[in-house]
Length: 419
Image 1 (cartoon, rainbow, N blue to C red):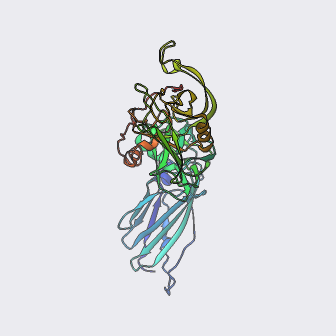
Image 2 (image 1 turned 135 degrees about the vertical axis):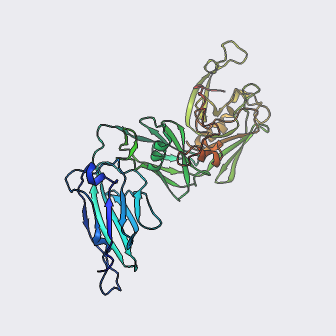
Image 3 (image 1 turned 90 degrees about the vertical axis):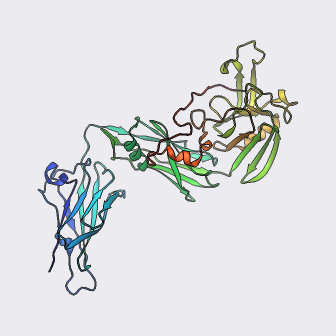
């Protein structure tokens, strides 16, 4: 056999040579189907260094190099026993392949190496190795939200980490390990709300009738210094019809749509001067048939002309600070004509009951033409959709772009009702 190349496969340069001396097994080959004397470049693949019983260090990358000019590497595929691929880069001349993503700890890897000689004859070998335990390190667990169930098209997927992650490179590792799959498939992105919280959404609302599954592939993956991914429970959600309410604070009318078709028009009242309702897109957070609303909870002194203490029915919450869509029979004369509330959207009891029964958590409630402030993206409910897609992607560590659009300063939420 002429021009027999030698391919040296080194795990992390010294990973299997002197650092750990991990044992590696190799098997399998392929031959060119038209060759009378099959050229088997794969038979020349070898590992330098000693064989032993120790396992490979997951902190080190995989590196595969070709010795000599007669042969080149054409492809390398590395996967662990649960199907996670190891990303890597192959040099243009085929002389070297190295992994660009972290290995998992306590994992079994299979590496398929394909080669080619100067005449184009192929070779192939399958290599296997195990990684060891990273030692005494902190485990990073992920809790996905919301709870499993059926939601509206505006519901973001959330991920809460068990430990803060501040380093940009570590954040990118976390993002790559957090997966959200949808049927039908739509592209989306994570954005970092703070050091322990991420939100995921597509560019537009979720498709009506979609199914979502969020899961983590971080188990055993190094995230940062002494921080490794742990086990996490997957989450499955279903999405209902596209239900959205658009309230025009200037015309005092709410229009409700189902899958783009108008299904109701409701006269309403919104926030009066000094208490204007927030503009922008909000997402239904919850529903309460009865809420006691008191003005002292939002800083209005008892005995003031603006003070109140009342029982409110059919209350649909859209902010944590206490903005609701609810029954307001005391303002029936102003509904459709004037804004007289303390920030909530009020309507008749019958309309509020219909709204309460029609909307689910995750449905869209949008306010336009109010003199109020813009809904915050984070910190007071789900204002995620008020960020443009460009600004949303800036919150991704993978994008490696500084964030803006209000993400740097989440405002503290008032935790009480505004009528």
